[in-house]
Every structure is written in structure tokens, then in C-alpha cells.
Image (tube, rainbow, N blue to C red):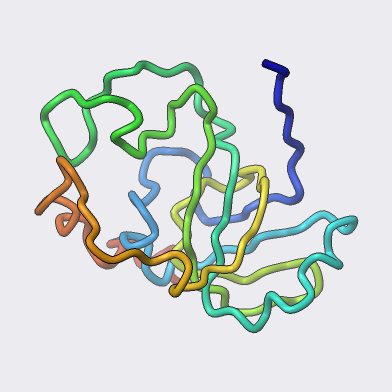
Length: 161
């Protein structure tokens, strides 16, 4: 198979300068503010995005190195298959976050609930559309009853301003 290459379309900015202390999932990063800076050549692609309340950020885990196919997830003591987790160390270190879009200012998107390290390369943006993206009859496997343990708010008020 042919090699696949992506190039960043922008940079995600957040108050988190290193992996330690970054909230786990946007739910735990409630009210943590950030910006998404699109490179000028892609600015025209933002037309109409300001009408959406939430967006899907697709990004490269740029600090992730290597991977193992069995991991111990943060909400469990049992080793699980990598693809049954959201661990950042993956064969293709791609992350996704659904975040509220506060505003669009030129090539800069203002967002909240940011669970991403500052300087993360942005690969793509998609609008979140509940009728397309939410599914009924969902099963969450080994996370059943555990995902509620992710706190609704990040505890460090320094990052909410």
C-alpha cells in the first residue's frame, strides 16, 4: 500500500504546555479556553463554520512516540487492546475532539473544553451535526459505568479564564 502523508492546516493553542495535567477528554476540560489558528491559505475554508455550535478537531499527537498493542487505560486496571481505548500512543497518532465553537475571528477559531496540548498540529476541522454524529443504541464495551468517572469540570481554575 502507498504511504499516506498529511500536512497540518493550522495549530491548536491551549494553556497546556506539556502532557502532564491535560484533562482527559473534552468533558473534563469544561470551560478551558483555546484557539485554533488556521494557516492563511486555508482561511477561505472557514466560510459558514460560524453557524455551528460545535466542531470536530482532528489533529496529530505530535508528542506521541511509539505504541504498544495492549495498554492499561486510565479508567481501568485491565490491559486492553489499543484500539479499544483512546490512548494517544498509536500506530497513526491521530486525535479527535468535539469542542464548542465560541467564535470565528479571521483565521482564528475560539473554542472551549480544550483537552489538547499547546502547539498541536491541526489536520482537519469538521462541523459537528448531532443528527449525523450521534447514534442510538450505543454500547461502550469495557467503559460501561466507568466513563461517568471523568469529571465534568477540570479542577484547575487557572486555565478557565
